[in-house]
Amino acid sequence: MSLKLTNGAAQTTGLRLVRPYPAAGDGDSFVHGANFAVAGAHARAQQRLVQGRMGGLLLGHAAQVARPTAFVSLAVHAICYFSYLCPICSVVTPSTGRYSAIFSFGDSLADTGNFVFFSGGKDPANRPPYGETYFHRPNGRYSDGRIILDFIAQTTGLPLVRPYPAGRGSEGFVFGANFAVAGACALDNAFYEAEGFNVTWEDYSLGTQLKWFEQLLSSPSVLGMCSFPYLCPVCSFVESPAPAPNDALSKSLFIVGEMGANDYKSVLVGDNPMESARALVAPVARAIGAAIDVSRLRPRPAGDLQALTNSCRLHLQALVRTGAKTVLVSGVFPLGCVPMFLTSFRTRNAEAYDPETGCLKWLNELSQYHNLLLQRELRRLGRAHPQSTIIYADIYGAMMALYTSPSQFGMTSTLKACCGGEGPYNYNSSVICGDPTSTLCSHPWSYVSWDGMHLTEAAYQIVAHGMVEGPNAQPSLYANASSIDLKNE
Image 1 (cartoon, rainbow, N blue to C red):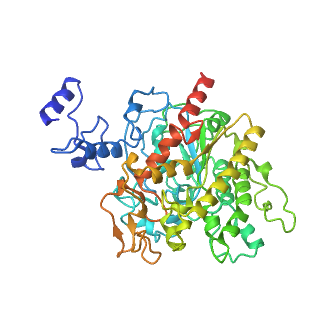
Image 2: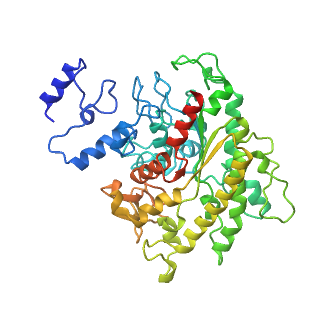
Image 3: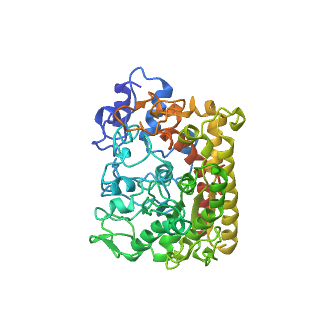
């Protein structure tokens, strides 16, 4: 479209001349819109630019433009791009959609800056090229851009969810908080110590994250700023009355992201890694269930590996007992398709690999076993708490679609890391992404894996769409949000 035509249309509607997005840069305001047109641009390239800069609200599907504004709120007075420590936009109208806030728990697939904070900024995720696709700088996320949590937040019309440990003391948590930390296990360190493990890692487990959540709920303010609208009488930067306590939590979305991969990673050693990992699946599934309902915790009989220790978490309030009405719980991704595991367990035995995808079959079977037990746990919780909606997010199914039919999603490389070292899968534990000697692909959007352990923004976007629209969440977040609205009308 020509500049003359664009400006003419703007002036006819009484708006200012439309600002060119790429030329104006991230520091400028686009309150009155943005122009993504580029001379000589191909349609596909321009589509990617628009999808990336529109904040993921369309999730790559133009059909959502016709969706009622009941779910996607575009009432944003100001748009801001920020890293994990930058403040939330000072003037934001809360979403008129179905979720008033998001509280997230998980590991590196959901971390938005907490581990970088704990590492004092020394973690590779705090170095280029992390964050280059969307944020144009490292931002604490283990990807080239946004992750699943970001797409869900933007689709619901909410700001990107602030990391809690990294964000304390800088801004309030009006729209929720992210407690996820890279490397977090579902089981706490006390469990591993009781089993004789040499525990060398910090305890950022699900139990620890629940403690942080409890701390946040018990503190109505952060350095004098409103922490939650329902705990503080006045939030100067929220343009709506503060809802009642129960109403606020009931309208919040709670996300328990993928948990368990780090637990299994810690025991995938020795002569029988599969047996060692399978022995942890039941305790991991119960730990995730306990995060939702504390009554799932039981005293641990001596020598019973499949029961959880409860001494350090019995005081916690489980999510449904704090008033949570919507809890999205993710399964484990296909471990056998991860470049890191493909490199670690590389074998000449062709029978070990799936001929269709090239993934290691035994590791994917571990993922399936985990997801089977987790779904059983969630069904039990659903029967025990019919007043809450507990949604299973099938991240395994969403990602297997990428590995079996990559061309349908514009992908050309499924098992090689976009950013990494040498080797058949472009993953090398000695030369990880962010290292000065690491290599970087030229088209991250055509790769599934970003750094050999985590996904690219493009892959995360596809997975997020399956959760929001279906079929990888039943009910989908869109359907659940719509039902919440109907109940309150």
